[in-house]
Amino acid sequence: MDNIIDARGLLCPKPIILTKKALNDNAVKDAFVVLIDNETSKDNVERFLSDNKVEFKTEQRDNIFNISVSKVKGKIVNSNVEDFCTIPVNKPDRGKHVICIKNNKMGFGTDELGEILIQAFINTIKEVEPLPDKIVFYNNGIKLCLLNSKVVDSLKELENFGVKILVCGTCADYFNVKDKVAVGIVSNMYDISQTLTSASKVVCP
Image (cartoon, rainbow, N blue to C red; front, side):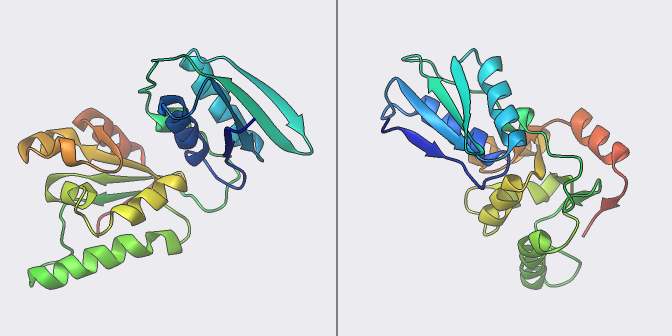
């Protein structure tokens, strides 16, 4: 089969993102196969497909899971991939702490320096262990999640590592930028409050 989605070596949510993209891609006809080499991602992709009522069949060959997916013409899958992502409990590089970012600058004083510092902070999160469980953005902080942000790629990379990113929906409405949010889940104050109160600790740079 020509339509092969190679998700080997990738962690959730990347295999689900690739599967969803193929389902919604008009260039992918009728059916495709997703290749996965770890059971957690396999289970997550299967749950994503089942919940979206997409027919599939899984076979294991030489420690590789081959998930054959049948497409339905014209059907668009809009589910949030993060909702289907589970991370192994023994994964060593993620903690239960939450990073809370409320400004697009870090510290007080010179704005230019503050912007440099917050960009450097976000760009280096992936280098520090353990990774946060979630990152919450609100007030001016949500501007770091917009299309023109210099840290969008770093935030997307963190999502690929399993870090959930919550963007305050009220703030996005206030700044009239909801259509420009390029990474994370546009969330609400209930979920943000629950995230902060249930965290083992909250880090506010």
